[in-house]
Image (cartoon, rainbow, N blue to C red; front, side):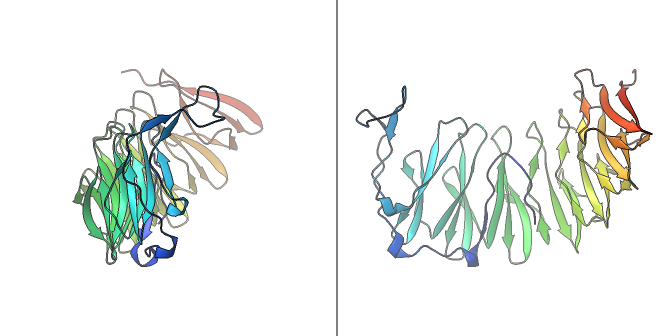
Length: 317
């Protein structure tokens, strides 16, 4: 499965391939120490400050991760044959292996995968849960209050949201949160066909593949595309548009009422607005529609060797 783009780091850890490190490469883990500014380090850049995080042997294989706001830091170190995750100087328990999964958007929450024997758990805010053959693609919601990740037991995949496992499928994609953090969607495969699972329900399993989800600004609407053989159809609010040779990602207007996407058929290009195919053009100058602050769609296109500027204003209510 291909990972979909999102804000936090994705992990892919399969138990049979993730063996514990050999004891020969291990280093001792230092006791936690209070972070202390170090003034004795020479040749620091101007206005720079060094902070002591603890004493570690150079063989400890330290791997640091810093939150986007720079306020928090985690790192992994070896402890004999075990691996330890250290969060802001506080050591977690030793595991056979660990893999950092991500910070919440505000940097206040952390998550990592931890291997015990052949089973993986997800450790979120220091609390371990689950015992899976594989865990993958963890994403916090935009407000940081919720978390979702994919997990595999045997030959079945499911998405775990706030500790609760969803339905089991042959495969799942990474999760996508709405902007207000109230909704989540992910692709699901059954009997070789894909659909989008959202709002605790799966659509019809019709597609050979699914794209990432585009959410409207108010989080009430969603759009994605599904592969149908060598053609692709945009699905808007659960309703599929006609299939085209090519479909690009949809864009919602600022007020979330309008949606547009670019498509092509037999070498001709169309700007689809609110599920209505527009005029065919020989070329469109951008593959991404743009709405201005007044929800006016504007694009530039060539037809019969003439360059046109097209503006579509919203209908009057």
